[in-house]
Length: 380
Length: 196
Image (cartoon, rainbow over all chains, first blue to last red; front, side, top):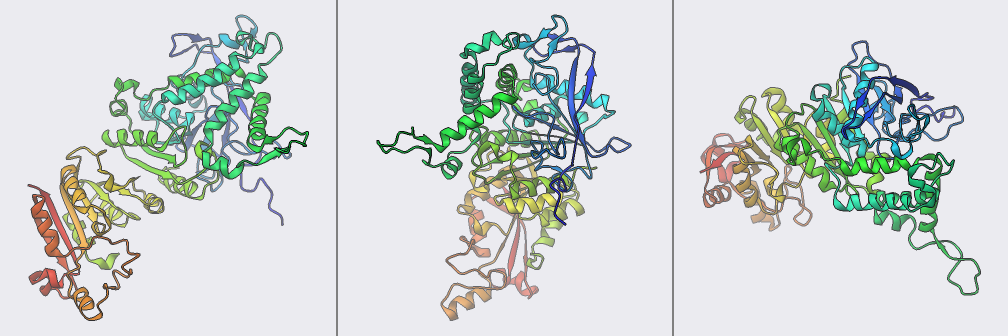
């Protein structure tokens, strides 16, 4: 019998929605008069609620972390390599919750949703939210689901930052914390790349100060360019050489050839850019990159990371990837060393990989073996 | 590993509930025993990701790190005991690591195969070739063991580094002889050392 493509996955899943009418006080001092979260869950919540795991998504992720949306769907959720039966986040053991964060563009309250006061899309008027704000909303979702404690909070990249923030903001809630390809804060170079991406969006005439939805338009050019810059930072130079080299996608350098020469890598980046335009909102991209820029895990310790982590009680797993230059292994090691100084229980491995920052999403045998082995200690 | 003879000695020396750092912890066999039998608060360090996966599977906390990079991420006196079990001979600068571990640990436990054992001596003397034994089966050119020493060498180095030997224990199949003439009869040597 042929193996069904869903056999090794959580199968068909449906997003759910929860409304939170209570006022949300944001870190910026602004308020949201209630919000909605779209989320998915996988596995069964045990009667005592002890096997709940929160998965936090990164910059361009959403609530659809695993499984498929229909029989015809051939693209699984963004972390299907990690979440599912027998996988590191084993849905036979855990009840997995993954929300789309506020400020996002996949159904949770964000710049593209309607503001009740004006009955117009929020657009650029949507308040800036932060990693800490997301933690607050995720906590409300937990309470809505009758969860009082996370067996683990897990994320990669910006998701890892949320997991770390959870561990110090609500230590009693988190017994295990996994931060993969994360950083305690962005470097000047990281912020610079984000700023280039934002300026690409702002320079598109269709941006219209962020209120493009009112005019039923979209800064597609700017978004594509922003994604190209961003995507570049997710890949390693070696991987790009391997995959594209100097190969031409079309044309040649022969003067008699009428066709314009285009490198494979140009074509690839253009494709990545164009794919993103259809599925992502420009205001959300601006908001997410600003949330990244502003994240600073050491804030609670007045700039001292060890101090900031003092109250954490979780056991930590920190993973980096050797070729990741966006959030380099040294950034993970800063977290690890602060945790060691603060006398926390921590496991750290730098996974040998040529896949760059994106490695945290990919199927790497050593990465998944370590992740699985470590999750064995998380009571479920 | 268990026939090495140093493991039981280490377990007997580590204080109950102590904070222990195991440098070059490998798959974590020793640290696991210490956590089970001595309820220590243990941390392993290893350079090999494959070892880390095995140790993590035993429920241990392990950090991937080269112990020869200075161990500056550990404050002085951070641990009750720092252990280097059968790894001293693979280090490029064993003396630098020894100096560091007596700072970050109140005490250090170091064990190593004794290259002065009579079998090694006879082997070199009669075959004229670098010794290969059951415990140390490598050829000279591909061995990870680049800094062998004898019991006498180790004690001399400790003296030079102002490191005090608190206690030593020799293991061998010859029992009493190893206690009387460790440099000749001990197969493996275990030391408790501390900073003067």
